[in-house]
Length: 509
Image (tube, rainbow, N blue to C red):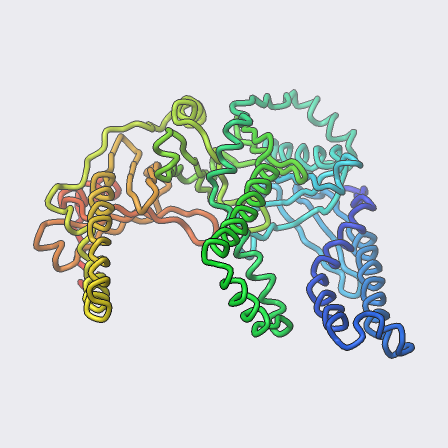
C-alpha cells in the first residue's frame, strides 16, 4: 500500500480556467454583440448606470467563478499507486474515486501544449480497452512533470511484467527495477517526416473543407444576428460589377481558406516521428501542441493503405492503423502511422514493424463479366435526371449526356482495382471509391466475414465479400464487390474451419 499522494502541477488550475473560458466564448460574443448593434453601441452600456453595465458585471462574475472552479479542481485532484492500480480521487461536494488496474491500461498518450512547455509539463491521457464514450480517455492528468509521467509508466510496466503490488515513492520504483534486473526498453527511431513530405501533405490534405465547415458552424451560432437581407442586397450590388470580379472574390476566399488549412496541417504534423520498442509503436507530432501516443502491437487489428488519385500518381500513400483501443486525440480519430509517405520508403518500415505480414501479395482480381455492375446502378438515377434536363432545357439539356462517359470510366477504374489475396493467415483486400484502399488483416483479428448475393449477382455467379475487425468503438469493415462466387467460398473456408455455403441476400440465417 502506498502512503504517497501525488498532485497535479498548479498550471492545471489555469488550464482548467482556460477550458472554461473557451466554452464561454460564444455566449460572450452573443451578449456583447447584441450590445454593439443596439442603439448607442457599447457606449450606451456606460451611460445607463449599473443597469447598462449588468451584462459586463455578469460576465466578470462568470469569469471569476470559472477561475475558482479551476483552482478547486486542481486542489481536489490527487492520484496514487496501490495494489497494481492507478487510483484517482477528485471532486468537492461529491468525492469521486476511480481505480484503473494497470493491466487494463493500453497506452499512455502525452500532449505538450503551449502552457505545458515552459514548465516542462505534459498532459497524460490514460487509454484502456473499455474507455467510455467515443474518443474519451479513461482518465486524464491535465498537467504533471515529466518525471511524474515516467513514474506512472514505470509503475505500469513493473505491475504488468512482475504482477506484484507497486510501490509508492519514486525511489522504491527504481530500487524494484534494479533488484529484478529489468532493463529499460530500447526505443528505435524508424521514420521522421521530411519537410518536403510535410509540405506535400499540407497542400494536398483537403483541409479546406474543414476550415469552411468550421466557419459555417461558427456563423450558425449568430444566425439571429446576421442581417441576411442587407447582405443579399450588398451581394447583388457587388455582382453588378461583373461576374469576373465576383469569381475572383470567391477564388480569393477559397485561397485564404486553403492557406489556413495548410498552416494548420503543418502545425499539427510538424516533426512527425515513429519510434518503436519491443511492445509499442510511439508516434510524436505537433509544433504548438506536441502529442505523443503509444500503440501496443497486440492491439493492432489491421493496416489500411490509402491513396487518392493525385497522391497515387506521384507514388504517395497514407497508412492508417486500425487499433482496438486508443485514438490520435480527444476524438475517435484514426491513428495515422504515416500521414503521407513515398511507397518505396513505406514498405521497408512496414516490413520491419510487421515481419509476419506480406505487403505486396499477388491479388486475385474481379472477373471481367462483373464490370457493368460497377456503374449500372448509377444510371438508375442518372437516366431520369438526364431525361428531365433534356426535355425542359432542350437543346442545352442534352449536355447532361456528357456525364455518362466519366461515370463509366470511374466504374471501370473501380473494377480494375478490386481484388483480394490469401497468404497463409493473412487477408488482403483492395478496393476503390474514388481513392484506392488496400486493407491488410490477420486471420486471428477478423471478427466476421459476410458474403452477400443479390438476385442479379446470383445469376452471374458473383458475390460481395465483407470483413469486419474491431477498431475504435464502432469497428471497421472492408468490402470488395462483384467477385467470383468461388472466391467468396474460398475466403469463407479460409476463415472458418468447416465448409460454409454462400449466404444469399434475403435468405434466413
